[in-house]
Image (cartoon, rainbow, N blue to C red; front, side, top):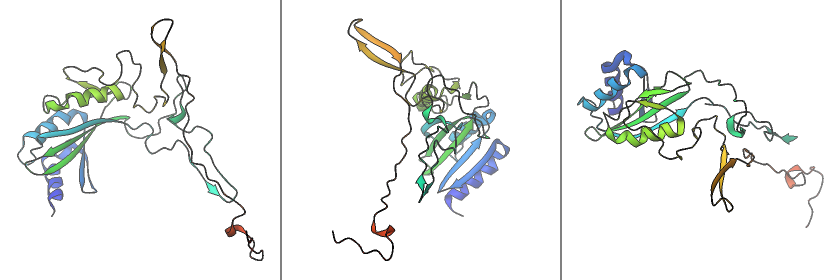
Length: 239
């Protein structure tokens, strides 16, 4: 049994029903933990010598509301090429547009944590879903790995995921007056407002965004007069 398979077996033995899922793929292990067991599992992963995951490398949020869905689908044939003219998903939303229906069977928001054990030279990924899609909340692990402070603030800023127990949960990348969370799938790619410096008012002003949202669609050009499409009995041009 390999080292990573041994780690997977130990995780399942020690945590049992606290793990909702364990996946070993591409040489990496991902465990899914219920929100109610998140802190208990994290503490044991850090403190138990069997695991000794003393370093949290990264923490990020995920919005699964459009998971596995394409903004456009294309079909190429001898008769034409579908350009995906009609909007199919969130990519071309404008401020105030009605949101597409969430077709994902799972909860909408998740927090992903990446851990490293220097002692055992192993890595581990943890996924925990917020129970409420409308107001996503996950326990903060800042008391377990204090370096996660800014990572959790970033996930709060970009995804609107609240971390219960965080000592200073506020925006870290966007402006204080920013409306919305830019990494949510229902946030327009063009944003909601644009700003410019007004010479008359001598200050920066915010205005409704004037950019028309669009999704770039690849263009295929076919020439019907190339040698591959010529009739078999027609000679090629000498030019």
